[in-house]
Image (cartoon, rainbow, N blue to C red; front, side):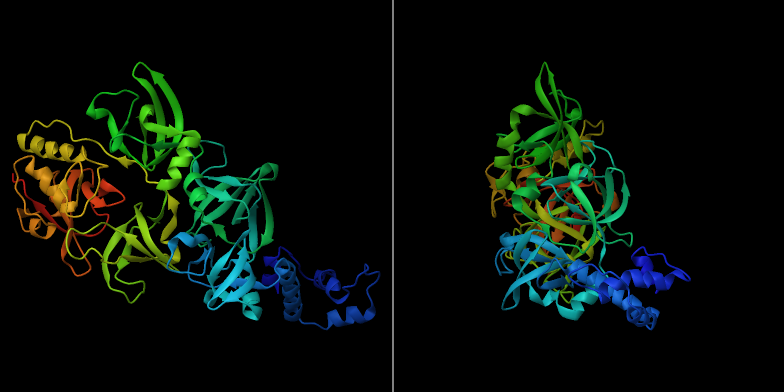
Length: 530
């Protein structure tokens, strides 16, 4: 009884129990159209005869009835993770995903369509898999375990910040109208909320400013969250800067000037989005200070779009993306825990989503240069291991290899800098052109040929060249190879230092920089020599 009452902040003890029971239960026994004028002896006797457990159960039912009264046909999600909310009852079309419902999210069931239910939750109406939605007594029991103080967003978009202060650099996410976030604590105009995950300590926390009617705190159940291409891609930015260069990329510089490779700290590739932090005018032109992913620096404004033109263009480049949140995540050959684990992917990496199912996504890791171009790569979205949302590409941290006194090191650095000139150029399966398009092994073959190093055409054959290298001995210019689910080499990139490779990845991303262990390497080879 005490545990139950504490859940509702009714700290009752000793002789106050009967009085509290009367105050709580009189509305139940005496529910009428007109106010209750007196408490009868029969009512008092009936209440007095109840055990503490019976009193607790009656209060529980009353509170559940109040909280679920906003739903005409109440349903609640029961799943390990979340399910998708779709505009159409089709699980194979990832473009119809409009929202997601986490475990414990409540909804109104509008109608049934075979295995699907048309539901409404958090201001969104769409289709969800009916096998994950409880009704009746099961739903009420599930609801009881998921009621909590939550912030309900009342404005179109509300910034989620890492600290309770307005600062252009502390925005970590966006909350949208109708969404609900579990309250951790309230502090004046601000509320600390659970953004993702659970309250066991594994979740992401943030602050929202609830003053001026932006949000209200209510004891309620969770609801759906929107996943809309335009909203999810563009509302990540207060003031968006969009990379629209004539070439493949824009250099991001430490200082707003236009000379010296030692001033470069990143690559801002066509299709990337960034937050505009400042504008600087000097003798070399206008510069934008931007933050994109982990990169903060200056880009030449002549090659960027801002304002409405940036928004209109950026929408066409937004794709459904999986952002990894754990140190290592297994990749399987089929969307099942029984599927073969054939590689793993790493934290803070973003991967394009090819298809999405309830509980699983198929990723676009990279394109093969062999006959196994349809190799499947599935990861589980359960347990909040990945965040799946529409987004833009982000800038890549990159520091060019500098001059080296050692001739061998200088030669290797030249290879790396030469290869990185072609970042942003197209991926073409079977191609070998550094400008018009190449696949992974064609890119490596052509870069090395420029320096007089002859290699076979495919990555599988290239992996037989040179000498074996361990990861702790890897040097810029070494080749890093990756295998498919059968263990056969099917992809290659050139190690450029700083834990990165340059590689021809996919038709969407073209030639790009990736982390050297963005998926598990199968081999590392030195084809340059000592």
